[in-house]
Image (tube, rainbow over all chains, first blue to last red):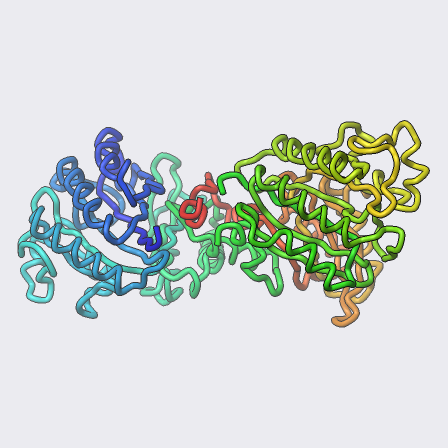
Length: 298
Length: 298
């Protein structure tokens, strides 16, 4: 594959293994498509998928994938800890190799048109694919969530970019975008007090006066009876993983709460972790060319 | 390349550029062989080469490389600051991808046999390829150097593993081994007192009661007027980079001395740094397969 796009669709099912596998099967054994990872979260009731492929193979793959999503998920019955606006909630494309953002936007538009016309789903283009500034930010697009969209979609400024001008009852709406590689990084706190996680999330995230490229929210991890600051680091080059991590640790001290662990969800670019190793080990003048595997791969 | 072995041969010529290039040319433009680096030291009169390749391609590459070494180096005329036992002094193999130490030992044995039979060079297998405990340590094998081997080779315990039982006058002897990837990692201290660096080096290294896979010494950095604990981490999986780093920081507190930086010399396997990022960021259940580049390029 000379041209590689990464696609990280999120769908609103994280508990029903059989349904999840039916959906995932649509991405297996395809030419010029490689499924890299998928992980389901029961509390979020959500699955995050990562696959790569050529721009040409991408649209057909999403068509089959979306069909299985809409057949297996009913948004009228969905609940979970993560904000969502539809069964196929978000479909972000990331340029990986031999393509730029513009070429990814072309793919995003083809996919948006397909979801709108073939499956009658209202589609919103976001981030680098957004047609207006108001749709740049996924959180703004998704605000109100599935339940709120029945009213929101009636507003002139929230007319979908593709598809019908009313919410698909079972499928909801879908956001299709193009973005920088995102790091999903969650920090676990040694407290069951959700307010602590929520307060820390508010201070660390951009909209709360925190770090420029951090989106964060507080989440309860019921199975462990602890809480979590769940983050999306939307530009790990400018807002490093260690910086978000240390800021959470620092804020947690206010509550006498310890950081008990963290979690990388899905894939992470190597540089995002190497950069944190450099920070903590205080490595001077390190060049990424010193990494043995990089010399082998490239 | 699904299977990759790294080879770091050292040959006894570091001054004659024409001869060095003739030798290096044998590793260029070969299928399934990639030359990564070579550097010559005039004081040592020695060149250290790093290349990677498949197990199959390795033996033929070394055959041509060794031929050029023996044609261009005459040990009867060699002098230099670094211990050496032959023109092609050492040939260590390191498992990198899809191979284990056992498969590297097979390659080392083929190469040993080839050097012995085709070029009449006495060959000693060392470290993980050693057939006896006495040949594990390269320093023990090489003791006496080229000049001393004319007597040493007559001893029953120093009968070569391959090749003739007498030293090749022009080519000397060669040590062929298999070892774990080595990490050269130095930690800089905010003091110009060499005794502090030396004392810390003694406590952190294996022979001083410290960490099992650490070799260390204190070094003065004259240009910065600070000192350094210079280390070889000979098994970064069992003695992690962060552990050596934190132990040095902990010991430095005894002297009220701060760690002011660190340095990675040459190449480092990705996992050695990722592992430190995992430690400091307290990442739970991280799988190396979550690294994007690993999934794309492999």
